[in-house]
Length: 590
Image (cartoon, rainbow, N blue to C red):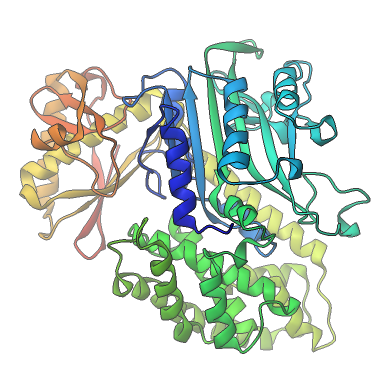
């Protein structure tokens, strides 16, 4: 029987609570204090410290549903199953149960609680290599649960191994990882020969859709390059809510579910075209996905820009505008309806306090700017007598013109674009971006380098010093820490003067040189707020929280890690201060 996303959420929650799991709050889409990644891309991301041995205040059995975003999927949007924004249904065992219980329970949830046919499920397991043996435990467990051998597939490290860095040989010393076992649903749709002679779970034809992945984190990279067994073996499961909802409703196309279809109907009405028309389907999928992601980003205060998360948001909006233009839609005219439909879908989950009037101007302003850029781009195109792949990429990079638009324009002039040349330029740009990013995010909090831990602790001092100087109006809006510097964003109705900033720097350095002890206590969230512990207002906190005390000077809700004494931090210098929005300011220090 068809179910909506609210019913699916409740079934997930009830299932794990009956098995003594605690629900942990979802974190923000833009990660706090983790400069190794631009966006939260999975529910396990905030749990890295606990997967490596720290004690979680809510215990060893956890679950939640985490809003996530994966920028690497932008180019894949347009098929029946990929999205950039999605929700990850997750459960975790931190050194408690392992493979047998995990696979048994997740199969029970899918088949008994959701009514999915076991005969339509196919699973994959790790086939083993020189370093790690075949995952025979998962194979035998699946067989004992009634999954026929013909529906159990063995894959290598590129398909059925997880670590943050990829295959074992790419894992740095100290990183954790392990084999995984994925679950696919078989819709039984016809196989498209362009994707190969035979269909299989990892085929891209759309017949199979991955709905869950149980990762068994049981290894750590040793100094000599070998993989050693962890004393604490963990389970990390993730399943896409949108995909599971599609399967439960026997719908091979996730864009036809209630999480997207209201937007598709708006696009059909505005364009006068039907979604089922193959010439418009891909565009409508891209528009609905990209605008939804942009709404969630705007809801967290992000604005389009030229750097980091802002650049990704800008790219999403501009790509959606291009696709709207391609199917005859005026972007700014239809945007209010699209934004409101997204708010309506999620108003009881994430967007309860979200107002259309707060979201629309952020996205609408970018659309206005981009349409002016498009006008300039068209003028530039008219100057080009002969196009090639490099020119096409420059149009894409400078004005946001997707290759298909440029191709269409020059096709009318009787010219074809060398796609290989375009791809080469595109890859060159991606490699430069990747190199820049790896330098930018070197030594991030996720790998807990000493320098980043010092900077992270310094933000606690900075937060309190801002409060001391600017009084109770101050609140944290976010932070970003690398091995080279800290960045701290805050709200204040009074603009800080240069004298204020110098005084704040002096206070922080005095607390550092005094050598204040740093400790933490676990306590109920209500008690933490009652004693005046500072919190990041956009973050949802569990009922039991960690409060870090810097002697009697600072107390703040935080997961850590921190130095043991402020003397470890050394003196800081605030080298840049700027206004970044209405009553919003940013400090850089090193």
